[in-house]
Image (cartoon, rainbow, N blue to C red; front, side, top):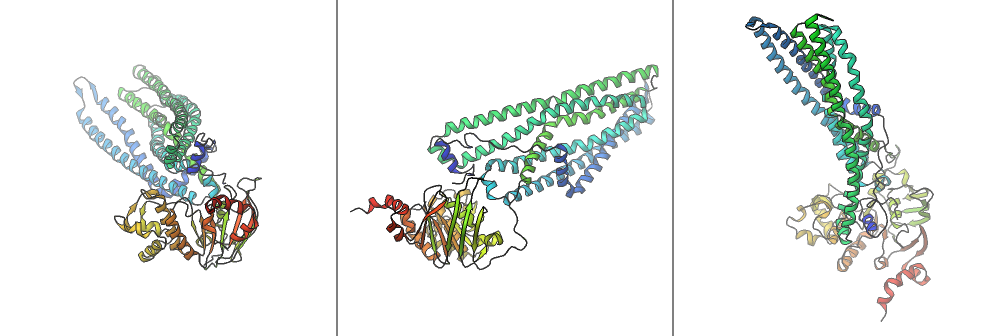
Length: 619
């Protein structure tokens, strides 16, 4: 049995309700390794670089918008100085100032909109590229990785975590562009008015930065923990919903709710801690910034009254107060979105840890494309283990000539399905070789190797689409006649023709209202359409009623004629006609021969056969 069994499989939930501990009752989603902020930032910038035009336009727009906003206080200050005393207003100078004030305000608003548009476009394009890379990486991961990770956690990384990166990137870039220009611009403008007061403002600023950085350092770990637990919760929910029928059948709902509540409490605690710590940033920096504002107001009033340390007018004091407020505003803005930014970095670490996982090794440049396989399979002294040091298959030797029908039987966990997985190179052998038509399968390209096989499993898989599309999955270019012919050979045509739109009927994910037998017939028709050289049937008729099984078995007999076939079966009635039966136990082939030979031998196969049929054959 595969120890890397998927957390999303029905068998996992079944083991839980039977009392075996697994991820459904004690889910543990591995958190992303700690990645420095600088490294995360550099990798995010790599995704931004292809969209540099949006980046440049947004930055230029931010510069122009901020400069216009900084020009507004100067106009306001000059306007105040035009109001010399009661009844003494210099309208000749004031009116042009008001006109420039309106123009500057409208210009600042227009460029701010352009900046927001470009940042949004940049963010969504970046998120799109990240999600494409993450999905592409999943498609290139070895089956061992998929089997050993909760499916819900992987989905959460591709969907939720990438969205969180987008939210943080959007907020961060928006505040970053405007903030950098605002800080630089206000310093320049303040220095042009009064160097002493400008120096006072700049010297007090590091206190605000220090407060924000200390709080961010403590809250960052909490956000990382929050995203990790959220992935665990997604995996837990996906596992239970995928096997809801089994959960209900075993009355596991209450225990499932207990498990959900426990993870949800952990998520609540981690989220509460993260939100509390991050919420301290904004009040802390606002307190420091208010101190700066008060210092500027006091010093400015002293300058107006005494002329020390500089001589200022009332209007210039107003300009300084406006600049002091605008100078500290970027620090407030950054701390107000610190939650989104830290969540984005925590999510980015999880996405990058997925992208950094070791992918399935690519086919070598000189990989052979096998185009016309004959079906000669030679398995020579093969060993295999899922976990190093715990061998599952040991010294497996089998030779299947073209057109030969081989059956694999034995108790659960003996390695039959693993045997099939090795033929398709879902896993690589630890020792020995598997050859197809005299060629080591490791020298063949995976796509051409797998096209040589047609596989029907006990677990069916259908996707949202038409019946025609589901049957033509292995041959998208197949004509309607070919699809219908395959359905007739699989004895699926009768129920398909009875559907509202026949082969054009839309079905939902996993077959919707189709019975298990009907879904299996569609899967069998899919394989019949591909017309492979080698057939792999893993309990392919286990979900079909006895009458339909006889019909499908007849179709299989027709299809396997002239083709090599490997049949995994527990019901021995389906493999009596096999040319060679392999009885497996504890990862070894302990008996081999035809049905009659093994019965005459009176060994393990005969014992298993008699346990199924001896009673029924008694007079």
